[in-house]
Length: 401
Image 1 (cartoon, helix red, strand yellow):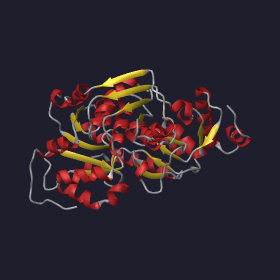
Image 2 (spheres, rainbow, N blue to C red):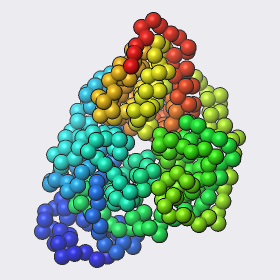
Image 3 (spheres, rainbow, N blue to C red):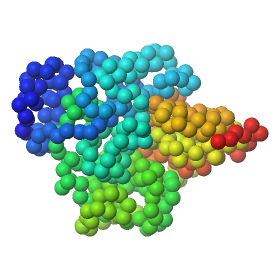
């Protein structure tokens, strides 16, 4: 692996211990995966933020680092709403540790907007062909697939190291030859909205970490592509996919048909929805927004909840920036008794561990909740989630947006 003279000096510790550790991590990865050198990146997105997942050891490591990031960098969701953590009954002890983690990242110059959808934020633009170092699985998938940027599936330490250096090792999905589809997936039925999350859940289990190209009957919207990629990254380890005639590289590069072919039928998607009937108990908690809700998803949730009252605990997750940008949607949602929660999600917050059955409209959450939260997960579209939350009950308070 070739290093410039400046990079060699950093590796020798001449720029301080923090940068020495950072480049050591990237060089080790580069050696393992056969990188020829380091390349500049445009931005970094850093996982390993929730105290639930990194604990005291992670907090100690981050707190010992010194310096400033060289490129725009942002955080993955934390373990709680940083401004209103008490509403989900987070303990003061957890909150203290979580705030310390965020402050440790902040002193390194990282934007402390904790979201899995950084591509929706102002001032954090990503374009076709941009090299990135992102580490949240659904964000990686969206950046690679829907935007056409280039990032590997980084771990938290490697993404942070890349942010501090402004560079990452040149291997994997940074190289054009590794972005070619390896398997063709033909879907035999029409799809809409939550079907894409179910499709991603099924496809990820089948293909693991292969790069698929989908042949679909319908043209998916961006939120549907977001759901598809997020689910595949969770049930499998897919970091890049293509959709014929839709995603940028599939449109620009005209890939050859892969030899491996898979057909997915409606009955396979129906099995994901059947989890609701097969669950041992009724959902106690309804959650929406994994990945974080877009403006369109917040609008739809507001429309579905307008004039109704939830009878079950209901959490809707989004980025703080979008919550502030669309206060009318937030007001309508919260008038129903549902809670709009920022900075975190049902997977990485310890609050979810208090429930034994959680209903989700996300293939990603459907895959992760059992293992990370110790709860059964059941799957439904947003309409079904809201119906479960409200039991069809209405009130006269309404609300407008």
